[in-house]
Length: 274
Image (cartoon, rainbow, N blue to C red; front, side):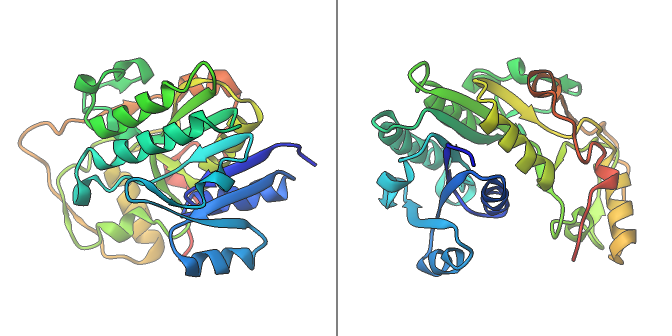
């Protein structure tokens, strides 16, 4: 049995499979959801579940959630509805509580959307300051988390576009017009996301890391394959008169730090299911 207690803020599409796998591997696991119905449902699955809403101040049982060795923060930002500052304010409230807690290691799940389209391969050092980022709200949140160091170990995980299982790329473009078919994708399969987070829990390395599959096929190749595999109507691919900007996000820093071997290095071979 593991002697570590892991707390996950956000038992959603990624957080719940992470909690289940950590439990299988012998960790003590607790986590948060935003509705009473979900609390009751997950308790039936033997997951120690607490109600927590970040509105943006925490409402619920944050104190119990922070009784842990490692805290995984996986809160999807709602910038479109609530503005770019809402998520950083959520994180600011959270970090104030973490500072007073026994938590030793924080993993904050950020996003590769922080990188602008620079028409080249991008690495972690390309976006450090707000003015460099295409998603400054995420960078503000990352900086708030990083300010917990050195008293706490802080790992920032910039996740690629999470797909796999019922998140099938072709489903979202079926029958539509796509002008950016030649742009490379920056995807991460959920199974790899879970395994990478567990690797970082076991080996708590501080710093900022891109979590992304190392192979980057084009959107057109991805959409054609998943539409064909699942019977969706193919989109219409249109060549833009102007070059479409792109980025290729590199996972090399994370691979070097963890020696992680991807289960699904190529998004063309990702596992999906209806």
